[in-house]
Length: 227
Image 1 (cartoon, rainbow, N blue to C red):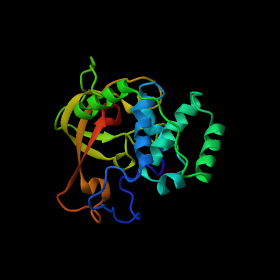
Image 2 (cartoon, rainbow, N blue to C red; image 1 turned 45 degrees about the vertical axis):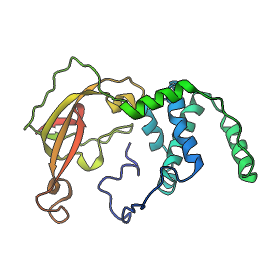
Image 3 (tube, helix red, strand yellow; image 1 turned 135 degrees about the vertical axis):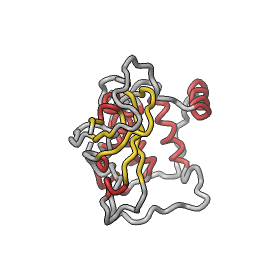
Image 4 (spheres, one colour; image 1 turned 90 degrees about the vertical axis):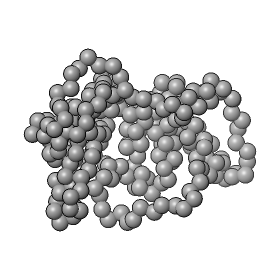
């Protein structure tokens, strides 16, 4: 999508504030929001790319003014409502109740030891999106490529600031789940991935770019054309 969530290259938003000694969680509700992702992922309500797409469908003002884990809650609510797992009206009723009674204990949750085991494995070893594919990469190290300049209306990982820009293939990787397919409910469709090196002046222009600087971007093969 082409929305406010695609912030790469956007200016006017002020400095990035780095919090000293930032805690893992700023509030207990963030722990719950984090747990909502694996709980509903394993139930098949969304995959990783669909989850990102759910965040992208937030209202722009809400996206820019809400904290990180509120974005997660929005995506989970979006997909579980669509699946009929939760009733939006019931969710609104419960939300109003706890806003009016903030000190009331939350309902007890059923323990899910198998989910804890899964998350411990993912945290320790990661959850790779690498997949086997019979496709032979079309490009090689040193090839000049141009990023397709169209503007898809669905989920994509092709950032706006690289569209239409020309760079050089620096590395060729294995095939990985293609987010423009998986995020839009059309299957994994694994595609080769390349690390493309762009001169900063190609992306930002000589008046803004720092001299002798580069940006590296990992791009799926369908994003690229021979230059």
